[in-house]
Length: 102
Image (tube, rainbow, N blue to C red; front, side, top):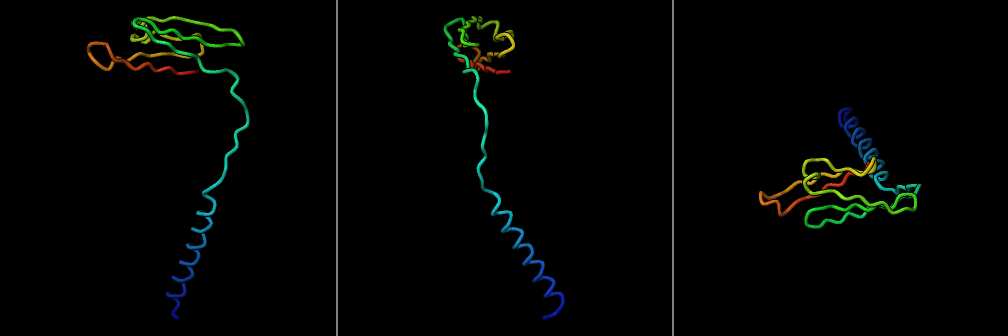
């Protein structure tokens, strides 16, 4: 066998060996340690208001926001969450409420 063919064969075998190693290492299990210390807030929407009820340190806390405030980006629950209401039609009958927890 000529030198270029031997070199090509050696490189091909090395690449195959590395590829097998990478493929073998692509699986596995990730373990998370910790716990959720507070449940998420309950959000209820009626015709003109959003009521956010949160259980903080074993005590129920409720706050009410008008849809107009939220549409202007003026909604937030202390330092816990911010809310933004976006209407999806000109009649303001369909909307999306985004709640972002800090």
